[in-house]
Image (tube, rainbow, N blue to C red; front, side, top):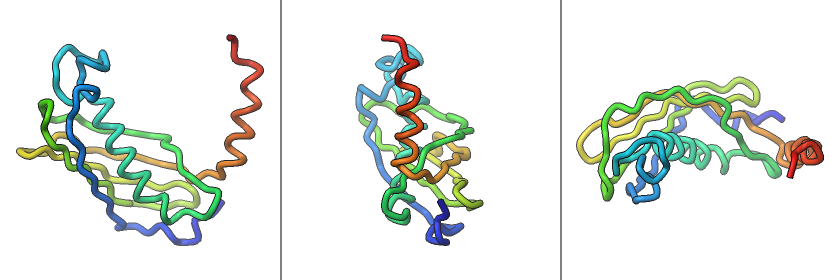
Length: 137
């Protein structure tokens, strides 16, 4: 599935998230402190990239994350706001590469790269369904 040049290098998306208790390291078990958890920050980055792409995809298509390489540079407390940016840095067929950053109200708290692949949802679900009989209850 080609993207018909609808996705271009340089496209940017931005979203702001509030650090709620459910996004903390203590809540997720990825640490013991009530600060933004690295898995939550990565989730914010993926969501920002996903929502940048989705309006540009053909009907019946979506995207899935296939690679993340980020550094979590500083802590953000509960109640803090995190502004996340995603910028398309490369498009190769169905693969889309992003530069991602996260900033709280004081400083850069995370940065790295993320990669997504455009998929045909129906085909993806059919392949997934073939795995179901192999999953033990």
